[in-house]
Structures are given as C-alpha cells and as structure tokens.
Picture 1: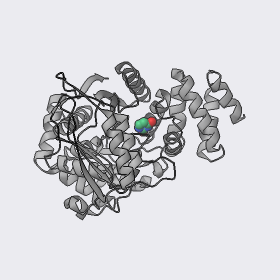
Picture 2: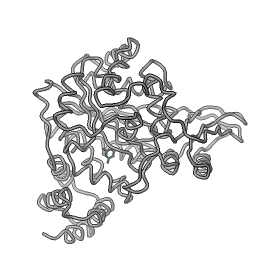
Picture 3: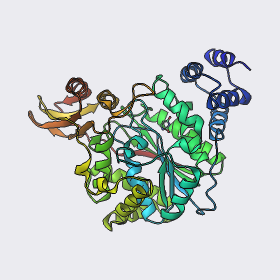
Picture 4: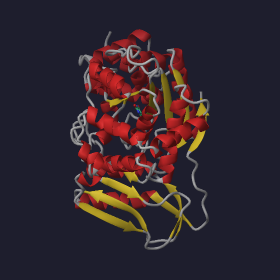
Length: 434
Ligand code: URA
C-alpha cells in the first residue's frame, strides 16, 4: 500500500478501508510515514470528513497503537473526564482531585495545548518537577496508592494520538470532528477507564462553534465509548468566554489551587462541581447529579480535595512548596492592567482570539518544537452580561516580552465587544447526552 494513494483517496472524497486506516496509523506511529504525508492526510480528513465507520476504525487503530491499560487489578471501577478543549479550561485540575477525594479512583490521560486551547499537561508542568511521563507501572501504582493520577501519553498508551496531536496543533487540522473524536476516545479506550465524563465545549473558544455540531461530536463520542463497553456521559458546556479568570499555564494552576481551597471564580467553581458530580454519579457514588454536586462541594469544604491534589503532586515529583505557596511561581516580568475606554455591557467575546493571544505570548506552541513559557497569560476580570464603566480594569496581562505584550493587548481588546443594551449572562451548560 502506498501512503500517497491513501492521501489521494481521501483528498478526492473517498471512504478509507479499515486496512488503509490501520496502515496509516501503524506506519506513522513507527516513524515510517513522514510528518508531511500525515499532515496531508489530516488536512484531507478535515476537508472531506469521515463516515461513522471510518471514525470508529481510526479511533480503534489509534487506541491499539501502543499498550492498553487493564486497570481491573487496581480498582473495580475507574472514572475519567475529558474536555474537547477550551480557553481557561482547567477543570480537570479540580474535578479529578474532587472525585478522587470522594473515593472514586480517577485515572486520567491528558493532552497538551492544541491551537488556541490550553492543555492539562502543560498546566501541570508549571509545577516544578511535576512528571507527566509516567510508565504504565507507575500509572497503576499511583492509582492504587492514592486513587488519582493525571499523566500524558508517553506511557506508550495511544502513542499515535500523542504524535498526531502535536502535528495537528501546528498544521491547522485541529477543528475536525473525526480527528477530535478519535483523539479523545482513543486515549480514553487505551487508558482503561470504565466510565468517562466528556465535557464538550461549544462557542467562540471551542472547536465546535454551534450547538448542533457539539451535539454531533458528543453523540459520536458517547456512541463509540458505549460500543467498546464503557459508560459515557457528555455535558455540552459554554465556551463563549474564558472559563474562570485565568488563561495561561501557571496562572490557571493558581486559580485551580484557589478553587480547591474553597475560593476561585464563581463560574469556574460551579462548572467543576457539576463535572465532578457527574463523575460521582457515573461511578455509582451517588444516586443523582444533585447529590454528586453536593458531595463534590463537601470534599472541597472539608479540605479533602485539596489534600488529594497535594498527594498527586507529591507522587508525580512536583515540588509541594509551589502549591502550598503559589507566590513562589516565577512571575512574568511585565504585568499590566488594561482599562476600558468605553462604557457598556460586555456582549460578546471572540474567545479563540484570547487563546491565540496567550499562544503569542509564549504560553502555547506555534511550532511542534516550541517550549512553553508557563508564566505568561491573562486574568479576565469581566464576564459577558456585565456592565463596565470607563476606566474599569478589563484584564491583567502577564508577559515576558513587552512587544509581545502590546500585540496580545491589541488582540484581546479587539476580541471584546460591548453593547449599550443590557445583555444576558451566558449559561454554563446546555445539554447532557448519555
Ligand atoms: N482534546 C483531545 O484530546 N484531542 C482533541 O483533538 C481535542 C481535544
């Protein structure tokens, strides 16, 4: 089989066979198919789409591209949670420890930043020493010992996704439904979780811009998960503005720390409680979502969720003094408040632009080889629907380069749209799909 023929077939709108999909995934994982051919096929998939059975074949080929975890010897039921990607989305840092503190084993395989959206692994690596490259043995041991682990794919689980994810990030091939479904579900299948809560984002800071597209994405992921015997629930949530205030790796970790200690922004805290509540429901710890949310809130109020997070940091080699005293995180050199020059209601946010502004500051990757500057980012101080006066602080920008800071400020200001008319606040969630 020739890779160029597989590319041409998809370019011309053809349907790939199971063998062709397996050939691509095996060859690319082994390094036999070069990045340029893989990029061409990814772009053809983005432009032409895939039939349902192609998406399933791609997902399974990726899931089986490395080892698969069987966690039955560790726990009878392991829950995972995954977001389709957003701006300021640090929910896993809170919902994981919360669910684990309520007695539910949480084994999570996360990803890195992708396009304008941040990644849990990049965020966690803001904590000096924190390791995200656990081996399968380490993953299992930690899950057994403390009931919480968040690691990357380098543990040879779904390695095809690890490679494709990095390639998609820099080739404009992220917002493709088949590629998102296969990326997320291959990781989930390989990591052996029995129950999975999917946080499917919709809006200007999500890969799915309309509710209809988000519903299709959610349904496809739920369906594939159920086909392979997993319990899956999807929550469709709003991403028409950053979630919480902080956007940028270390800033987001600090906001997650505050939330785990009972503080944090209202929208973010509420979002985490709902997601954790859903994990507890799926994991059989509670009878309904409301009880799940209440139990989640109790783990924060009692300090158990915070303690669980600390245990995970210690187990993965992170320096605890940083989470205990977040002032120790190295600050960015240039921190500036940006004030509003107009009065009105914040009506609309081009949220992806905010994510890209942070990438431009060095908080994400423009090329595969780029290293991340963990200190940069912003704190958004206004929400959609909020009334703003002239001179009020809109956001605080953290940068390590003054020129990049100016560019980011212009980009963010251009992404905020005001109205003289009153504007309704945005909901947090739209729908639940099971
Ligand atoms: N998260 C993933 O793991 N993969 C995607 O493609 C998008 C979000």
